[in-house]
Length: 167
Image (tube, rainbow, N blue to C red; front, side):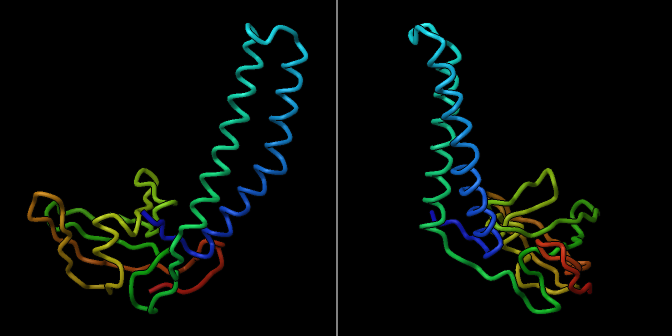
């Protein structure tokens, strides 16, 4: 499956790769050398742990590089009155008679516990491109779904924190 990433996501991933290659890799190699110098490698826990940390870092680098190679770049711009990526939206859930606030993000930045929902989630797919006042049916697997109403769209900050505009 191809990840959908914005230019900002790509930039952050490249920064992490560079950090892991230049800083973490050097530190992990030094830890392996120090542990190796302690003697018998067959019973050297520090050596095994250092090798595992080094391998974990290399695995993360490969994962991120593969993600960048296969990613689909999506735009985080949207109409000034419609829900887009990196916008904060206030949604009214009719069934529960509750209002909740979410930020719509790409899948690599999604975290529902922090109020960030992915554009690939059922809720994210449903609200993307809609406007304030729109009543939307969110489809769920095996059920009829549920209805939400977009109450407000906040475009006040983008991912870099620059002020934009609020509706």
